[in-house]
Image (cartoon, rainbow, N blue to C red):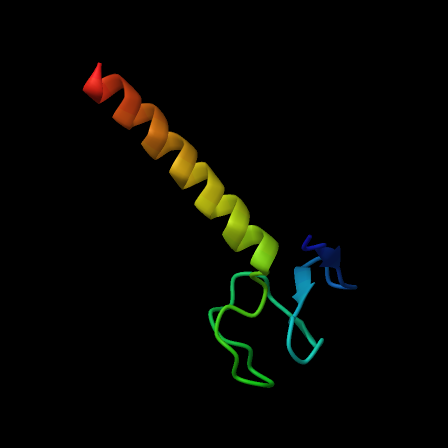
Length: 65
């Protein structure tokens, strides 16, 4: 689970999953280590996939009936 913190200027910050440096949560690439999507975790990916599969199964059910 990603926890956002506020730094001294009031900006919201997150932690890079690779190098553990503080970055902005909307950054596409970490400015320190270069990893893509530095704040996305495996849990976030699996939850998103589960939601998509659930919606697809509901739509398929109603289309076939």
